[in-house]
Length: 177
Image (tube, rainbow, N blue to C red; front, side, top):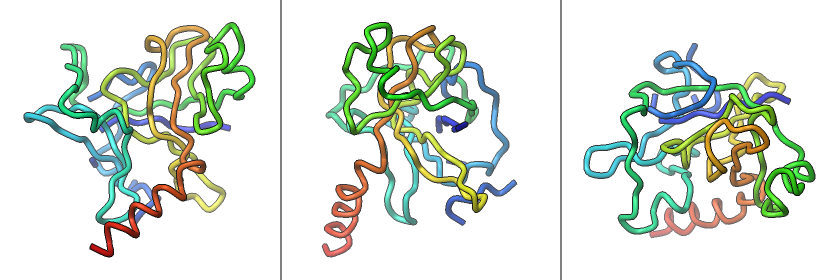
């Protein structure tokens, strides 16, 4: 299965035709219309995904007070994309990779040989999966990893299917107020 990891905002789930994504390329303007860039003091700090016209999903650590990391001079000003592979959880939890740190609420994606990955500044951005109906679905939320594009160190993502009840509950509470 091939997925795409993205970082930064450009008909929900259907593409209309920066970050330090490793091994990727710049996407076309408007290609990923659900992608957002969260800013603090005028600078990008995290990615996010529109899950409805008025709700954005991102990584929890993107909102932990004002402890945002600084992007390096190597950060892209373009929305980047890369095709990555889903890594089996057993393999990702092996002693050669993350030593059992991957929970049922997480998933790994990238390339076990290195070279294709998300990186700093990509946190909160989407890991998208293309369904049989030619629509893209939010499968993961960029969370963490060891280095960027390193061998045996794929990116770690929050598993959206595990978080759906919580996401829906927050959307319902917010709409009631």
